[in-house]
Length: 154
Image (tube, rainbow, N blue to C red; front, side, top):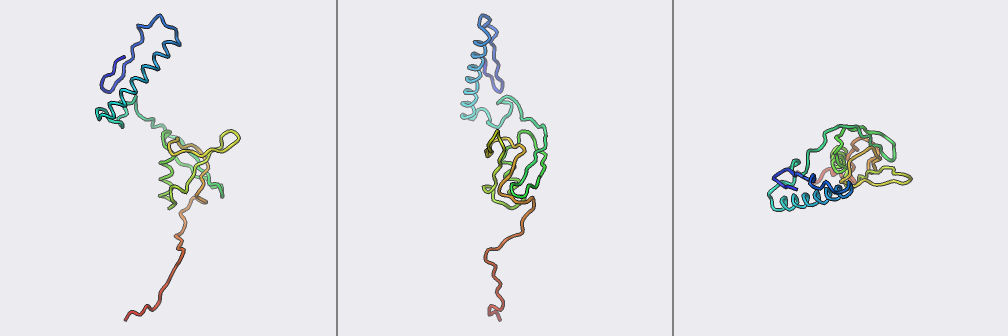
């Protein structure tokens, strides 16, 4: 096992007498140690945490279409996204576009016989969105509209 700069090289060829399962366990342990070393280097500032090459590659830029459905009206919105897009990104996008608080939005999927709320760190998939009734920006509501006429100004 060699840890150099941005690459990790694993050499398990010398363990030819081991079974496949033992080699797999050795490989997993070597990867754990390499990841631990990379995390300690990142903590020391020697390697950037955001450097994709340091952590084994770049993100996929494959695109797909995600269909978001409102809970009450059943309106659908199709969004083209990358496969690595997180729920938090879509939550922020929708909250800015439709003038809704981000905390008011929830993304729910049907999983087996129940429903599961997606976490902010989950990758976005076709789901139901609660907190938005229709895919339109609502008109501004003023809870206490006041109009003052003739306020005594000369």
